[in-house]
Image 1: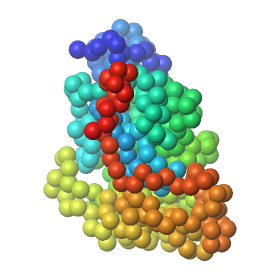
Image 2: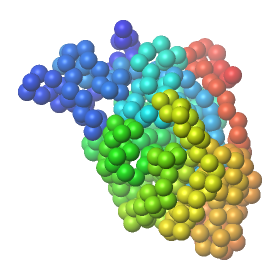
Image 3: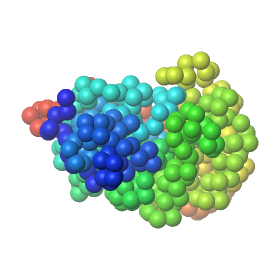
Image 4: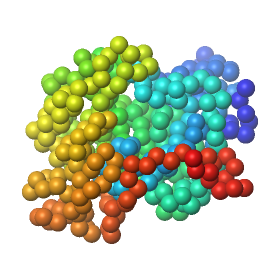
Length: 370
């Protein structure tokens, strides 16, 4: 049973001639009869409209390093308050957050917070940003946008971690309120998207081009490399060439290691050598900032000046070491600019810590850290 307290009206839907209502948030275009939910689970038809049933509810909140999103060029070393809800509009067979994104149970949403309360808590906890993550925030667009507005009134940034599977009009509204994003470009073939995510690649590419050419949002790309599925050198090169041609050379790309999960338990973990190969392919393609993820590799996790090749940000997992950017975000060795959003005075020092936070009783006792 949905709780009316957490149910709100939405705008992106169309009533069709056959009496169904089509949800227009994402390309899936779910057509719903009374009481039916979309594939995302959280958007539902009630009467003559589509409602969001999880406004203000979350599967939990925690403070992470911003590098874990991953974002390496957005306020490095700073803490970000992260949360997700339930459900997702993709059906990834390899989902590594499937306990959240594939949930069909409201009781998964164990914590709650209004946008204003969440902004207040993030401020009190010293977080520079808030991240919508774990499941895709486009499905709870109304809640995410309101949280972003409340946070930005306090000078706190809004970060979207998303697969980019969203239609044009809601895309405009959503990213109007985001300061940074990481887009999960899951592969570079239509077959992969159709067979392993039950979606299409073109809307994702359109989201990336929109971010690059129509917004000021700082964004980075993640590509989870799965053995024998999207790990060929040819596919990685084609993807990198597309990024260079359509987005430019400054966009950081993170090649992340797959681990067996959900419906792909039979796959092996991604070998570090595969990630290193992708890292080299990206650099050879002209991408200035390539990284590896989910493995320990200080060299391929660090940032190097694109002009002189010297290290400007050293990383050990999520912990910062060397820092050779000046107050203008330029290389101290040669003066070349490093694209990104950097603190003009100094990097953060949050390190590798992950801190769980309970917000349900915040107004009485403050945010309880675990």
